[in-house]
Structures are given as C-alpha cells and as structure tokens.
Amino acid sequence: MQRKVLIVEDSKTSMNLMRSLIAKAQLQPICTTSLVEAKHVFSSSAPEEYLCAVVDFNLPDAPNGEAIDFAIESFLPTIVITGSLDESTRTTILNKRVVDYIPKENAQVYEYLTRLLSRLDKNKKVGVLVVDDSRVSRQSMTALLRRHNFITFEAASAEQGMESLRSHSNIRLAIIDENIPVMSGIQMISELRKTYSKEDLGIIGISSDTTSGLSARFIKSGATDYLYKPYCHEEFFCRIMQNVERLENIATIRRVSNSDYLTGLPNRRHFFTRVAANLKVTPKSQSLAIIDIDHFKKVNDTYGHDCGDYTLKELAKLVAEYFTDYTAARFGGEEFCVYFSNTAPEKVLQIMEGFRKAIANKVLTFEKQSLSCTVSIGLTHKSRGGINAMIRLADQHLYIAKNNGRNQLVDD
Image (cartoon, rainbow, N blue to C red; front, side):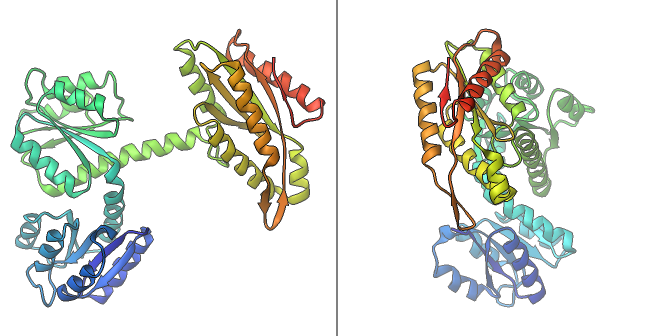
C-alpha cells in the first residue's frame, strides 16, 4: 500500500511543488488548504495510512501554528514549512514536537523535504543507541530520535551499551557521552572499534565539556562525528541524518561491488570471499557444484539477447530460492556456482538433482513466446587442495555431463 502524506498549505505554488516532490518519493500526497479541511480529510481515513504531515505554519484559519498542533495530536510525524524566517517563529516551531521545519527560501530546501520523507520511512528499521549516565539527557535524545521514527535503545554505562550492541543487530548508530561511569566515552569508542568498523557502525561523540581538543580526541579514537551540548535540535537531526546516510551509501557500494549486475546474485569475487571466510571455521564436509545452461547460445541466436538476459534472470531467481542456505553466485556467462559446507554429500546430491529437474520442468514466457531450457551440473565432494581444486574437479565433471548429452549431473 502506498503511504500517504497529509499536506496542509494554502499557497498554490508551494502546494504544487510539494505535491510533485512527494509523488517523486513514491508517496501519495493528500492535499488540503486549511485546518478545517485537513481535519475533515484526516478523519475519513485510517491514521496508519499516513507516513507524516507537511504543514504550513501560517494558514487563514490557523495563523499561529494551530494546524501543527492538530497534526502532532493526531500522532503524525510533522514537518513544518514556513515563509517566516524570524527567530521568534523558529523558536515557536522547534518548541513543538516536530520532525523539522523548512523555510520557503529556495528549491534546495524543498529537496531537503524529499530526503526527510525518505528517511522517515527508512528509519523504522534503523536502531540508534544512546549511551549517557544522565537519564534526562538520554530521554531527551531518544525523544528526538523517535520523532524521526528511529528504533531507540538506552544505556547508562559502557557495559550496558556494549551489551545492547551485542543483543540488537539493527543498531547502526551510537551516540556516546564522554562522562559515563567506569569507562569514559572515548575509551568505549576505542574499545568498540576493535569489533565494529566505521563502515558498520556510526558513532557520534557528545559532551558538554569545553576542553580544547576533545572533539579531535573523539574522532581519533574512532568516532565518525562529534556534537557539543547543549545542542540545537536542527543540528542534532542533521548530524544524525548525515551519519545514517553515510552508512547506507557504504552499504550500497558494497552491495553493488559484490553483486552481479544482471541477475543480482553474488558475483565471483564475493563468492571467493564468502568461501574463504567459511574455510576459517574448518567445515566438516564440503561440496561444490558448477551449473551451466545447456545450448544457451541457441537461446540468444533464436530469440535474441534480450531473451537470453531474461533467461539468466529467471534461472538466477531459482538459484537464489534453492540455495538460500548456501553460498551461490553467478560465475560468469551462463555459469553459476554453489558451495556447500557441513552438508552430507547425499543431501547435496539430492538438492542438486531437485534443482536440475525444476529447471527442466520450468516454462519461461518471453514476449508471448514460450521456451524451456535445461542445465548440466558438475559436482564434487573432494575438498583436498582447497576451493580452486574443487572448482577444477567440478568443471571436469561438468565437461563429462555436457559430452554425455547434457541435462544431467555428474559427481565424484
């Protein structure tokens, strides 16, 4: 279901711009021009259908932010837009439990709205840990984080914080105060970096201490950012967003570099990395299979390369489905490779035969044309000589399967 965004804005120009940005974010804009209309529209639908509200501070029937209060009281994360840039208006807005406010200055700040909308949806899966021995300070930060839909965790000491990280794999960012008991914030960060890299966990150091060089000590000890308190709400949110987006960008780069561009399966390089990591724990048994699509050139020659790509994608889906508990990859061209560890050879043989039969029975439809294909499989359970030796053996067995008529499996 497409999530809705309630817009309360009386300016046609601003409304059109926001409607366009919200639709661009794959959300459904629900447009109203007054507080009365907003109440009527909102009451006629289920609150859980809405991601948030975007509300003008000054409306004809709500000149002093009354529409903001309505949205907040309706439990809608609320983003405020305003044409007033004076300090009094800004303070009034930030004293309310709003997500953020956006001044109607230029197109760039409206682009910031697109980022905010995207974050409100993504943040529901992101955990943030706050480590501070002051309960008031912890709750103040977690209250702000929850406005942005983050999952929050609190800890009063380094020990509690480390236990939270061990227990909750969804924690992507930690905010750590310098003055915590037993182990200082800087010491805790240094300890965390022995286990969590900067690519896996963002850390913001925070302190009210004005000691010269403290921010540099935080960064040198492994923090990715530093925040001085008392902090401005806007700066707090901007730094949180910046750090979380940095981690997401790194994850995207990793995913792209480790994935085959056409099928989305892990690529050859990632396959070897995963297998090398598995070999460190000395598996009890190992097997390796190489899968090759029979007469794939004929598919390309008969139906075209677009159909060839479609065929590879469809078979890749079956590879991902059948071997979700194992290490599978597109090895190149029309070849796929699967590595099994701690799995009895008899079970591996049964799985691979089941896969071969599933491919043979699958009917593909491309541009109203039906086609089918088969695969030949080379399989080995002999692990002496390491992964490269296993690949050579599986390849030899694949060659035999091809020469013996294809659509078959050959193993040791």
